Image (cartoon, rainbow, N blue to C red; front, side, top):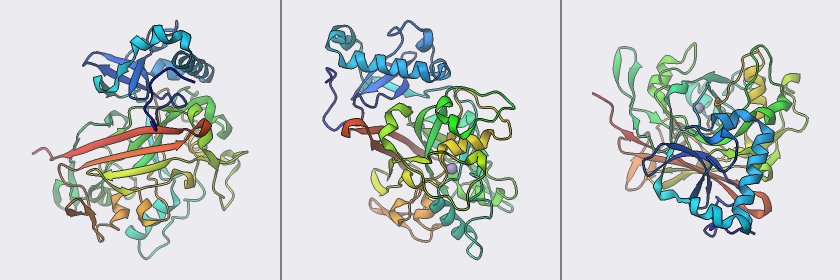
Length: 390
Ligand code: MN
């Protein structure tokens, strides 16, 4: 039972309790937990100074024992009738809260771990070759992105300009999205020491939604031989609420079969994925429902791979899954795939769309099964495209 008011069907019940940072009535950033349509600021609720600053970084760095203790404490405060008189006056309606970036971002890595996405992109870009390159099933392909341009949901996205092909410069005409799930690192590792695949839960705190905005014309001209650069680095949006792994226990599903067998450092004793149901809305219209459960590479394998050379991770690091696409057309997590390279426009409202136009807004949301038959919500990551700067 719980005393706190949670609207019927809300995916932000007491089994979820995601963490974020909000500015209340335009005040300074404050770490908080979301419950229903309210937030509970965390500073002062515990004796520890973990929540005194403007980000969640001190809490993220504190590690699994502290994460579990704080979660238990907050759950008890919101459910135990004896705490109601003290805690209820502290709750703030979500309307008064402007979401901020929940953590000071460390490094940002983006993977490419959906077999359906990689296959679709391979077919579009290399119609005469094998859609998957030879390395794809041996390692989780990824690249280092630009941490400094990760922005919180709701931030406008300025259309990027760049080289679109040989001798041509201008605003991108093929601006796209990538619907992804991002993992937030809490506990750092030591440079020179890989993080074993089984140590995922000792380092990673939780998950957010990510929109990896992508300028396909800039990307396709620049990406050979060193990979994504200016076609990606102008902006990456994240949802404001970090859903703790502890809230996703009921969402764990077996991982997909991996053939060929992976190398020992990528081998999990109990391969797993997460049953997250994503939805992509283009100007409020549902255009795609990508399933995260079928991702080929798991978040634990991604972490093991990105540290296997001794690269260290830091508190606040973000690594994203890569575009989430399923086998069906309406499960594609990018407009490049949804419109098959722009050849098959989709109807959005009264018009046809291939890529994003100025003024378009995209919202990516997700839910997952929670404990006791509940639903766990991620909220959404939104962004509106504004015209290129002259
Ligand atoms: Mn991506």
